[in-house]
Length: 254
Image 1 (cartoon, helix red, strand yellow):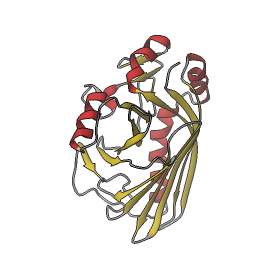
Image 2 (image 1 turned 180 degrees about the vertical axis):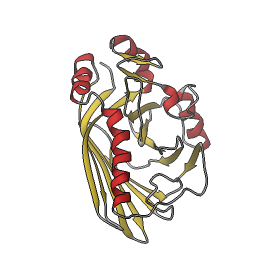
Image 3 (image 1 turned 120 degrees about the vertical axis):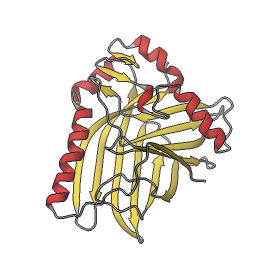
């Protein structure tokens, strides 16, 4: 059986300051065992690897973003972080491309050792300017609930200053998916963001069902980002211009 899955669920964003703002929408994500990409490509006719299809996955959307092996990119960065890479399993939680288009505000790499223990998480954050920053954490606890925190190092929202901190709370994905990010400024919460989901097997039937429920999901995500930004601007929240531009940065947080 394929060890890759679909998670159908919801995304929630709630802003607390300087003015309250809330939105919620339904999504589906894939949790892909990267070693199974070729097999998934063969099994599902309307799914393609690195080629256009109804639903597709491009390696250039993640990691080094140059189309080279994601597995190699992960291993290089784990080694640079002094995390062992022998007999590891790499899973990536992300949105797929639909009709050739995707925008992933957050993608998460889960790294497991040969005993299926979670040993590292890579949070890959993108903004709408085509930039990306990856936060790498070592995981040394066997708890199902993983908690990480770090200072913000990457300009994401044009309505939030850089001087703040992230607090990640995430379940090791099994039957349920739960990703929670709290963002704080001077110990006051600015933003709550979450993604919740329920697992199903990644096969033709379930993937088509997910697509039919969300046929234009990836277009809706980028449209919603700009629409919600417009509403924040209407509310009078000032724009924060990014002070520097990056392409693809990585920081080790442990």
